[in-house]
Length: 112
Image 1 (cartoon, rainbow, N blue to C red):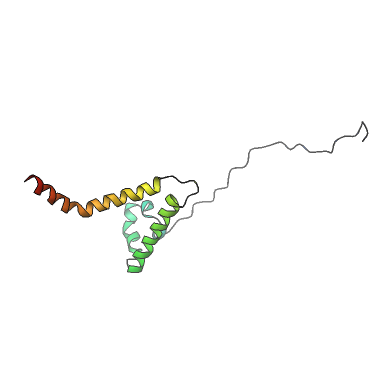
Image 2: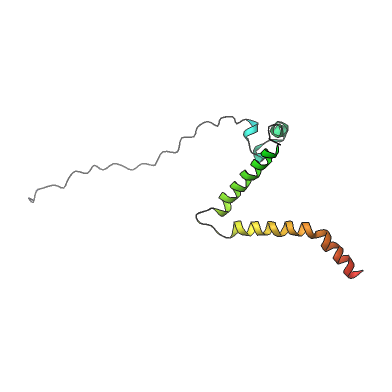
C-alpha cells in the first residue's frame, strides 16, 4: 500500500428522523363486532341482539374470556404474581359469598 492510497469510499448519508407510521382511516366497525366497553348506550340493544345466547355461545364466550385472561396475566414473558393473586382473590371472594349464609347463622347462634 502506498502512502497516497485512500481508504475505500464510504458515502455519508445524513440521518433523518424515521417517518411516522402511516395511519389508515378508521373504518366503521359493525356494532355486533364491538366489545361491550366500546358500545354506546344507544347501540346496546342492537349489540345484545347480535349476541349468541345458546349454550354453545355461552361456552364460547367463557372460553374467549379465559383465553384473554390467560394470555394477559399468566402466559407472559416477564410475569409477576399479579395474575395468580387476582385469581386467588377471586376464589376467596366467591368462596365467602357461597358460605355467607352459613357464616351469618353461626354468628347469630354464637351471640344470641
